[in-house]
Image 1 (cartoon, one colour):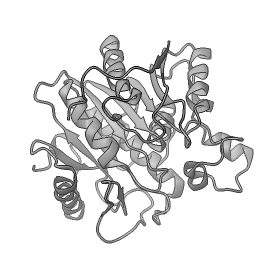
Image 2 (cartoon, one colour):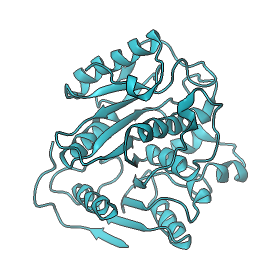
Image 3 (spheres, helix red, strand yellow):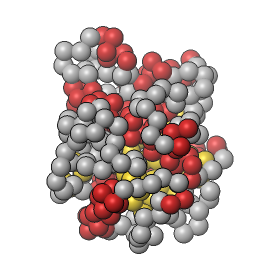
Image 4 (cartoon, one colour):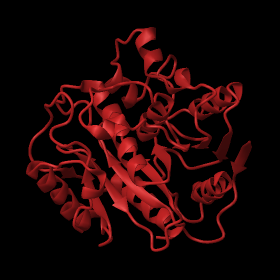
Length: 323
């Protein structure tokens, strides 16, 4: 299904102790403190609700070890880097509908856009009854031994964790976060790391995929993105580029997919979403594409009164139809 959004919206967009024991994962004191530090920082930078929680992904250090040291870095826009301990933040709605959405913000795998993408979207999802989980994933250039596999390891682990807690699990990714969750959804059987504990027996399957101005392909001629440079490098072979392109892993079993893209996006060429739509159609995967006349890149929920501010309601209706 194809939609083009050009009209302005009728209304504006709406604006703990860690609950980790229910997962059965043993969290070390180091990771509890790191998770608590992220919570305190996000309370300052993101005005986190008191009912929200921060849950470390790994029982000890992530697979392979390594990584940065020092405090989490947050820029003036609320974007995170220097990810010492990958986590998920759980945002609970007042009236839960029994379904959850795992969110991964973008940033070209250089940073994670919490303030402009993840947190506003999490709160908006709460207003629609969804429990939201915001993923803080490792960034490949921050000295992790797992290198470019580190974010995918975190995404698979996060899906397993949310799946162990929730009845239905949807994923919603933005830009590079769309690439990450699109890849994770396509490869639930890919073992990106050795089993750490009983949680890794959970198959990381999801019930639907939402990709907002995503990076889908790293293949020529779409090799200009930071995602391409960080994941495969400027001297990558065509095979390496193909191996990190989401469309090459889509099969008939890929989850129902929602796509939204601005036609004037200077970063993620609109061909990315067109390619994903066409690939889904060829594999008979239910897919809906929202084409936005103006919005550029990184608009998050979109500024009230602009075409980019309508995709969220289309997404909410789409999720309702899946239920």
